[in-house]
Length: 488
Image 1 (cartoon, rainbow, N blue to C red):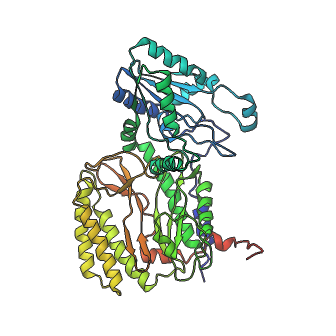
Image 2: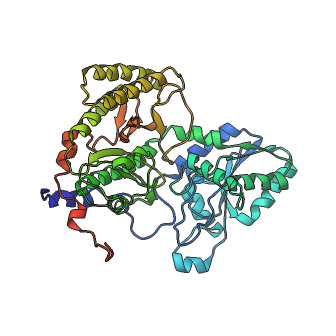
């Protein structure tokens, strides 16, 4: 029987959620001032040089009744959320031009104000760009650059744009799936755009802008870190509410519903990625996302889920027993794993590489191996494999601790040097017992500062006693029982 802590539930669900509260409707977000966008564009100018322009294609109109979400790359440089927009950065003049569709009065009557080419003065004030024109003039302006002869190169992103719940790894996978379908075979939108530029304006060399934007996004500004903290707070609160709500005989998808309530109640604009809610042996597949299984007494549950808050993501994972009490085998495996996991966290700091941090953590892991008694040879074998694999990775100077997080859950940018202030990433090593299809993994958000590392998700319990204590409280699903279908 769970203890009734209604006042705690009310506090968690209502008190913390004050993200971008606004009066009325605004067609432009206020998370970043125009000077922050201008600073990012200034670094693009430095990268492309005076004889080049950069041209970024915004996201198209979404299909169906789906809210528009700008691509990360476009939003990063100007903050404008308008479908079918283009952004041009003139390296010679150091000027930025936005090309927007013209006003659609009928659409505005149905959906509210949309920024358009007719709002040039307002758009320039909001985003800090120098000029605004209709998209119908982009071709003419490119032709002028071609006639002038001074601009010789157009830089545009070659990698697929990141849209709703999208990281580059999955965006590339989708293109591969298109190519593998003999009755589809479509190319990427970026590829089509590049081909059009080459066909219409062969005077220009076309170079990749992706590496420039990736390196800029690798180091987060203080305002970006604030957005990541907001997303992480909602992710953590959702996981905690899911812990409270978990009891045997509920379905995985019910915890998805709990988390979505917390996300959207807190001002999220969507999911960072689909929910990974995996009970029992479903957790053996790291990206299991079907969410259809009824959870049973004795199951161990993995939940990995986070929101998109103003174009910034999070990525946090926790595990807990469905019945609220760690069984002996869960306590044994999870306890060993937690010791190793915390050893990694302990050594993370600026000024050293992932390779050095891993080498230091391995010494603690090997010590834990010598002091832990395992109840089964399979468990000891799994623990030794976990530590050995981690140790083997330290031989590679290009090893990483986990993956970057920012505007994408698997954020972009490549850097194998010492950690620097403004880097944000997760760690998520996994311990696997293949004989029993048992899988143990945690994940936390880490921000590197000038003097250390902040674990911004550490308010979410990961210790055994903290999890069990939290699970004694009533959750949303206890207050609002499931309406059972007549077929059940």
